[in-house]
Length: 367
Image (cartoon, rainbow, N blue to C red; front, side):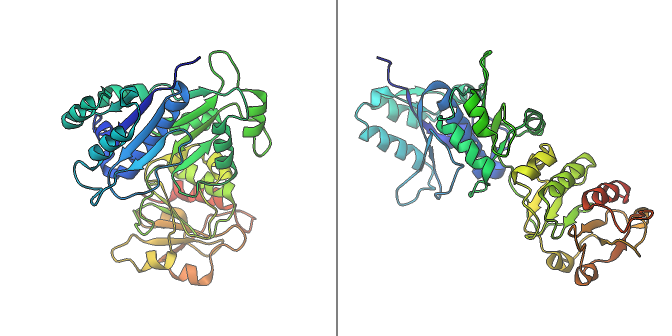
């Protein structure tokens, strides 16, 4: 009979603190990434892990195997709230000697050891968890496949995780610092099971690898940096993704989308962006052109129009280009919100595709 899987209680903030990688700048995102990594580690090792976090309850991704517990008590944000919760869990456990506590906190180590639990240092545990995230999948019935399929079909309702199903896109995302929390595929010469490949190929072509990756923290959609691109009513997800990819390639600092735009986190947009959407701080959704135009000390706004505007190189340096929908472009009211109108010479054509226009304007407008 196989031995029972290991059971681990993770002191989340202590484990995060073992690596000074700037996690404190966005603690929820850092905890979400840690939970995803612990979930993948559970999948690889068969361990059972409970991640204990202090502070107010909030969603930390959607782990399949790991469990997240928020510190309880009258003040869950107090200094030792997570420690007390871990000790309480050990006290209620029928076999605390079979539990390992991941922490380097001296007080918690002593309390856990007094109850018979084993203790592993935070840095050592983090190194184990951050090993190869690849999990070999041998059946479409694996619950991790169902989770990946759900994220390929529809966005994460909590807005925390995305699924990427192309090896090149996954590699590009990793180059931007996006670490997969879970990577499903073949391993050690064993290919991904055929039924799993078909299940993961939600929209047709079977997938050989799928990664679940935490989203970067979303910047403020009301913040308008110089040289940004603003999209108004761009409804085609492929165009949205292509514009995001172009903005990243041209060094544009931000792509702001209003609520009428297609989501940049949809499967089609992510594929078209080739991983660029995961660049920290690049994409923000929820912008409102009228609000942006009314902001004090903002950069100049330039409306992209099919005729009658200045040439791109004639705009002032740092101007923000505003692009409208594929069918109607910008309305008169939207153009009126802007300080300038700009036109791409299109020799005989009424207008260019919005993604093509964004590429030309992103390249030609002065920085």
